Length: 417
Ligand SMILES: Nc1ncnc2c1ncn2[C@@H]1O[C@H](COP(=O)(O)OP(=O)(O)OP(=O)(O)O)[C@@H](O)[C@H]1O
Ligand SMILES: [Mg+2]
Image 1 (cartoon, protein in one colour):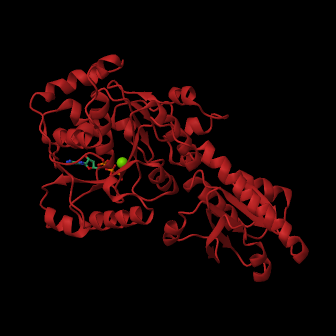
Image 2: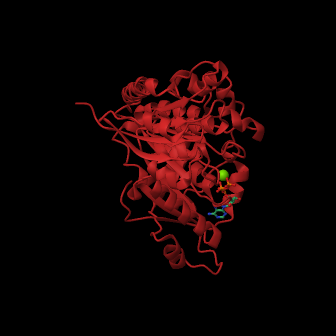
Image 3: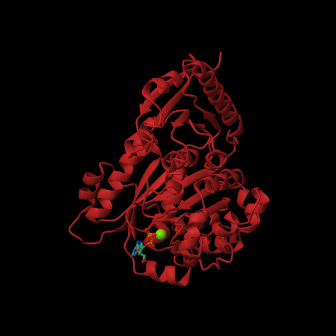
């Protein structure tokens, strides 16, 4: 027997209630878990959206209906969305499918037609669920996708992402770093890489993407790290859709042990889609009331999204700075222990300017050790001989070995994620 499908119905007032209720699925295998009388979902709906499918019932050409279908398609990849409307203007139907809908069904106001269109709807949902479940199965050997979050600007996300990614690559782990700060990303700058190709170029390259094509758009860092740079101009950001990023993640996870994603300081649709696909999160906070409050809200949002708490690590950036808030205050505000403490060090801003992360330029510094400890949290040591078996390691490994002799763990005693 096939599994039960949980579906949400979101509708506007274009369809009379009796017509709408005649189209609510009665198939025993499909359970309607929520009927929302609006087409704009709230944060609270994210929790409910843990359903297998969404049914959008809207008037013809409804911008909200199209936006909702697109949002769901991007944020809930692999979970179908079916749009229903009384009108089936050709352009509208085209836009429905362009938004990512799996199917479109015309609602006939005639009671005689209700049984037929409801059956069409039930079939469309079953078909789309079946297709998506088979199509989106993750490769069994897929790599760790780690989202580096920090809902306040300037908290240290990019410093964290770049140091962590280079630390992992220098250990011989196949590592990719994706700059998801689509408007103001500065990962390439922080690693002294020329962003001659970016996610924007990938987005407008036309055709589908496969591993080989994606690799052509990744920048090469001497440590062996590969980087997908953010667009160089803010107006190019809109071309990089959450759907594209999900395809990118899926390809990268097959090729790399680690995919680190640096994010902007907000829960944009791309960030939500990333979290939905992430295996772990590193939340970067500072000893600053706003940063801690936002991070706490961020943790609550992760919780609403059903993200497992034990896959979230908290990193305190610029620890030890005397700003009137202590580390124990931070623990109290966050309601969580701090996993890694990165001390404040003026060399950090110099390292950003030079484009050389501290894990390379000053591997014995406290900051570098803290980031090595973060890398320890996410990775087991490479197998004997693994690093030697892989090319493109020379530069990073040499530098790393200098700091290996007396490396200590700033986050010692933590369990791996
Ligand atoms: N441990 C540290 N010690 C001293 N300064 C630091 C430290 N970590 C980060 N900084 C400084 O904080 C500033 C912001 O860091 P970073 O760019 O990593 O933040 P971000 O969270 O990525 O910011 P945005 O949200 O704007 O992308 C940089 O100028 C950096 O030099
Ligand atoms: Mg940043």
